Length: 156
Image 1 (cartoon, helix red, strand yellow):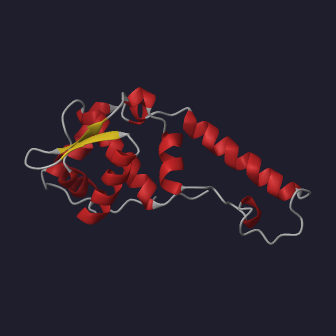
Image 2: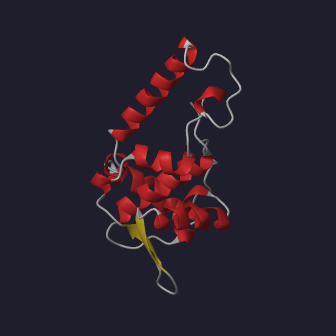
């Protein structure tokens, strides 16, 4: 299973918001930490806001913060939001399926079970969990924000 960088940076944005709670996080903070283009993060923040995962404040002194406690937002919820349907194989999407084996194929059942197991694990992990080692994370993030270190591009 491979997730997109969009999902990775959505999770990182939420993680940073959890680390900074209750203070606001600026889009430019996320851009500096992860070395991404600003429009990419703006799009992520917009989607997270529409989904009710973050609150946003526009203008000078604006930014975003978690809309719910970090312990109540699961990684699985974010992955489902940012990845959309998990059509691991063609037959998962009834609208585009052309496989004549639908309904009798054991392989598609195995893929379905594996996908559900993957999401079940992610449903047990919260944004609070991925921000729990706060001191270590901030120790790595603060030099990036201050421009002391250039971030290496992370893979999704």
